[in-house]
Length: 423
Image 1 (cartoon, helix red, strand yellow):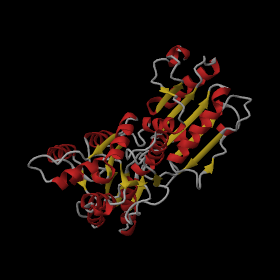
Image 2 (tube, one colour):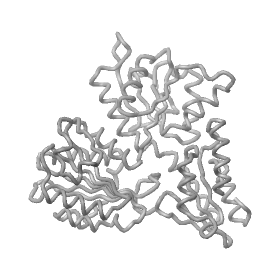
Image 3 (cartoon, one colour):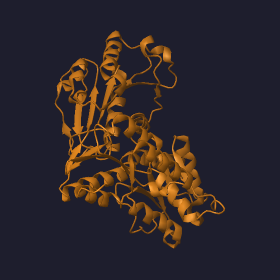
Image 4 (cartoon, helix red, strand yellow):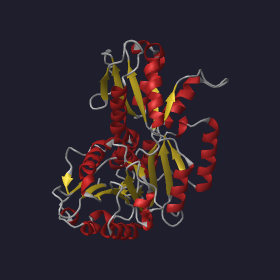
């Protein structure tokens, strides 16, 4: 797999803080990303470094990441405009203007405008301002852009930046817990995550009348980016919670855990760095305010890389099966793969999650079926869509001439394709 991530940081000319540019491969991203953090004033240099390091952590970049040493590291901001990332047409570029709320100088404004022109529709500029600063502190040319408020938490800023480029964007999380053990803790964490923009499933109902309860739980699990397990003393006695964990493992969902009050470690639970120990207050069964903040930061740091675990599995399944069957395999650089065998070609988009209109629309518009590929396949966990959504997806897929394949259908489809049979 080619390198698909460039993380760049520049500071004002003459600054004593080093410019940095890193490149690496993050499986499961779907499309290459180029994140450029720019300190617009000396006063925000340390904050910029903290956000840069938090993005590295959330993408699991620290180990094995290669310093780029490219032109953007050698001093001038403008030299970053010749970064290798600009040569990849499908790359998503983002320029983060870290500011202290005072006016930007003309040099920064012109650089941002030149950057935006070069990035075109693949570029996003995000000014970061203190909550007390209004948009008027920005030049008129930048005032119409959506801004992020710097509330003093580098991990939160990093999460929001990644969300803007669709990495961990939906922030959907399934909270798995034993109600008799950790109801108050689950409610507290649910409330805090919702405030941070997460969509959290917390089992507070007994199901829809007339529907099979395990199927409803499966649909909720499949819809989420990852699962957060509250590992409490009596968790192993909960049949449903064990089933939820088994489902997450079976379908390769990301899994994180909070080990509550020294509870026994569940063998099927995650390992470090995706498990955190917490202590609740005996009187309430909740976390202290400071500990709650630490837990939310932990979830923010680990959610991004966990939320793409399922896609990583699908990509590897596609790659290894193709290689074992002698099928030509090419990564197209935007989340899709081209297969070739016996004079036929197939386009595969291994999203991993249950299919949706956006993915079908992207395949149908980006590639011409008749002129480019003989087959188009959307691979994902479609079987766990709600019944009505499943029917609608099947109907749209037939109109768009896209084949829907699940995780355990995909190898058979590639086998058929390798042998000249329709996948």
